[in-house]
Amino acid sequence: MNPLILDGRKVAQTVKDELKGQIDELQSKGITPKLATVLVGDDEASKTYVQMKANTCHKLCMASERVFLPEETTTEELLDVIQRLNEDPEVHGILLQHPVPSHIDERQAFDAISLDKDVDGVTSHGFGATTFQLGAYPCCTPAAILQVIDYYGLDVEGKHAVVIGRSPILGKPVSMMLLNRNATVTICHSKTENLPEVVKQADIVVAAVGRPKFVKGDWLKEGAIVLDAGYNPGNIGDADYDTCYAKSSAITPVPGGIGPVTISMLLKHTVEAAQKQCKVS
Amino acid sequence: MNPLILDGRKVAQTVKDELKGQIDELQSKGITPKLATVLVGDDEASKTYVQMKANTCHKLCMASERVFLPEETTTEELLDVIQRLNEDPEVHGILLQHPVPSHIDERQAFDAISLDKDVDGVTSHGFGATTFQLGAYPCCTPAAILQVIDYYGLDVEGKHAVVIGRSPILGKPVSMMLLNRNATVTICHSKTENLPEVVKQADIVVAAVGRPKFVKGDWLKEGAIVLDAGYNPGNIGDADYDTCYAKSSAITPVPGGIGPVTISMLLKHTVEAAQKQCKVS
Image (cartoon, rainbow over all chains, first blue to last red; front, side, top):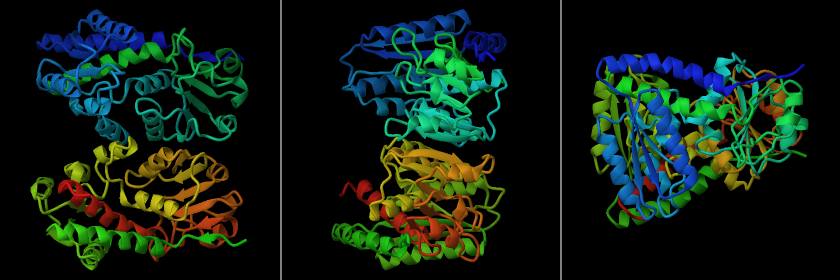
């Protein structure tokens, strides 16, 4: 039997449709949810991402403020910009586009974002508060993975999820979020011995490793669910789609899987932040 | 072959011996590392724990301040006490004894502790900062587990660690700490299906479930390492010691395993906090 194709574009559209109503209600009270994006340097891919985020804001009648800083910006200067945005009551969410130039202390910059404006879920405090289920905004890609799971009603409780990757914005948070949904969670990475054998145990595989076509179909248990968070050059996922397709019961394509849902999570968090900061719900 | 018995008393003594030199050095500069403990209510077990911690401080010539608050203390009153301790330059570390009475918002109280004085590793920010390896003090029991691993030179990198339990102060942080040591980590809990089969994969088993003699020897792979963080009434661990002893290559007894190392981790963190807060190292 062919697997269920998990269509991220449909999930994203549903999220945006729900957001429209919430944004209308905020605007009827004189509040326009506003996302500030900060881009340091001239990386073309980063410029494109920031532009896409601003465009999606505008399509949903949300406001955006784009801050462009030159390549030679110091950590101190970046911290000053973040502090100004933290203090600006018109700004509800802040996104610092990753990566920043290597001379900047990226972790210090991320952690300077106020917890209540950390709609991209990049602060270490936000990670802890997400893990402990204290209402922080999780990172957007992990949130997108959970959104796809919920949209399609996939069963997580008691299932064995194997997450390949342990980055602060993807592997670690998605592991904690699946754990909080009562999955048994295994976290694998570059030092894992016998990775194919470990993946074989999985009811749910999350590919978050950043290597094209890395996860092979013959690693999978028959009927596993494959959630591919990879986006490698040329729009290629971390899972080898054709061989995984043949073994899985449900699979996210790349493109059109987790990716499109990610931006909608950023906007969802920004709208929630506006509701909370303006005490509206 | 009989397994290696991992002797926590020996590990703890070694830690304390190292601390003595550091405390002497601090005192030669007029600084006495000071731990403040806060106990709310009349729980006898908690009183004993707090007393043990203070006694160990005094044995090492560290200072302690014990704050006893009545059962009827409100969250606001407790937050005021924590705030006073945060601001007291003589206090380097703060421990809020768990559990607090149920009418108190324990999470809010924990999270009110300054990150730089959170020597018991209970804040959500501290959990995130530990996971991201930013120099926060981890929870003391997970730190004790890692200390035992290091003392005995047990191999973690690339090994499969199965952690049974997912509490904020034990299962979750020890999982992240083992992951940061390049173990492949599986986190199990009450909803895990086929727990014995999952444990069978483990090179290292961390029992952190709070159920006496829960982990059975026949769940283990031959030669697994068993690290038992349980302390159930009657000084009984989470692992069924006799059957686990027969299958393991190394095992922590209860009592005398992880337990004795835990308090020494609290004091180690307090001394480090004094060094950092007084800019001495």
